[in-house]
Length: 95
Image (cartoon, rainbow, N blue to C red; front, side, top):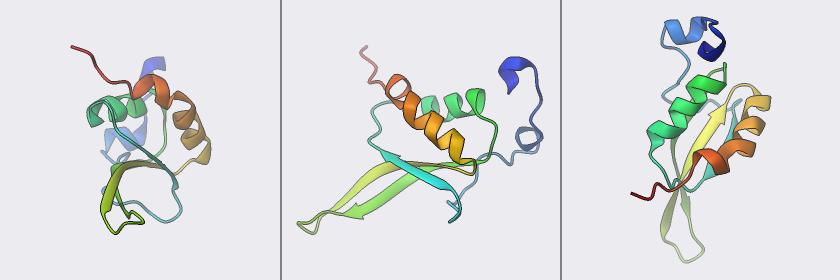
């Protein structure tokens, strides 16, 4: 973690954030109330493994399509930590 002056090789080579969500990642869906950049910045600063952040589409019972944000992590413990901290990260900004 960069907070502790440790270089993460995955970050150096731009391999931490993946463009698709692999099947073995632990997924967590949520409604986004802040900017996606705030979420990804927190992940880069506080976690070490590979991750995915993107849209998750689903079908409502009435046939309409809905969307949530999906954050998925290769390390399951990081998904748990993210889920516990999400309320403090995903706050609506009142300007």
